[in-house]
Image: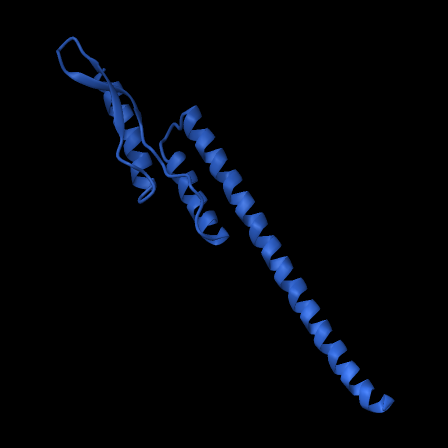
Length: 129
């Protein structure tokens, strides 16, 4: 039980250290040993998985969530699931960012075309008169 206790505590400490600011303190499940001492046999760390205020912030936060989830030497299935969800969150934010840049570029192109057409129209008007 002592070895399991050390392993569990190290695992959860890795999550907390890598998830600075996003991870809460660890909580443990205990088992009383034959010596009367409670040993940690399981644990969990809550990690905030809410998106950021902007796509850039969300991407950065997702990277930190992934790092925190995969920080232990032997990530659990739940750890891997959290990391996968963070990767999906980053991918979605990256797509939003790409779409915003595309729209911005199209907007700039449209504005440029409108200005050119307006200039062209203004130049044509005096000639027509």
